[in-house]
Image 1 (cartoon, rainbow, N blue to C red):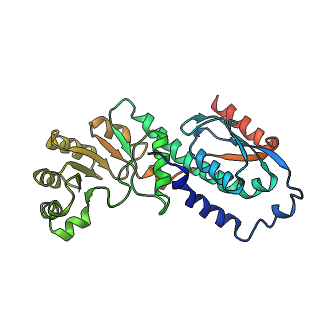
Image 2 (cartoon, rainbow, N blue to C red; image 1 turned 90 degrees about the horizontal axis):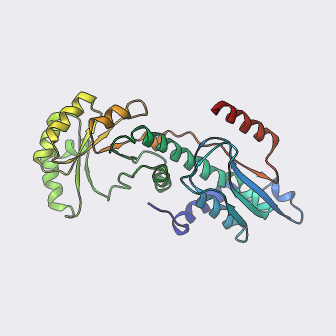
Image 3 (cartoon, rainbow, N blue to C red; image 1 turned 180 degrees about the vertical axis):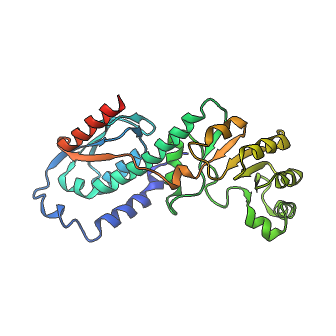
Length: 296
């Protein structure tokens, strides 16, 4: 997945409308002749950078003539004190864009950083990690892009991407067999069918219905092990439901094809990133020095 300015511009404008409202009450009175200033956007934590284009577009929306020097790119690992970009722009621009630009970078880098930790935990296996649709409505594209930057893959983007038969679909149709029968008669021939299975009996029924993907939903290790024997290569297998950094390794080592993890996007700690006009402030230097000592 890639993003471009056309895709993200409405989100950037939405964020700036929220930030500006009727204007900048503080900064607007301070700038005078509005001289050109230089600012550094830098990390105060360790993690994976994501959201550089979002920060860039935020700056350029307010000041198209701003000069931006990139010192890292999305996907790079940074340490406390790493400068991500250096910006030359009018003083008033920094007052307007600071929070919005940093929020995109911090939240997206938080997702990418968490995703990279998950990926590294199971890099000795062939399992593919994916996200889910859990997160902030309207910002799913942003979150899924950050997951890709972190080194994982995306599950479906919306309800139109594939046929995903879940528990409530089964209840309405009466059975897995009937749900698949109805949907096969109507769905495009290009769609794969995935069924969410909570028991081994459901796995067996889904296989007999000829589905392409079996989801082991909230099963324990022994149930998934038996489920894999039952599938025996006849379908792709996906483990899902409450998976975290503690449980992912034994699940991956079972040999499932995919592990989908809502935790990648629904509970995220932002990467600490700041913007300082002119020199980096002394308190930031102290924080960076302390964090570097802790990591040694």
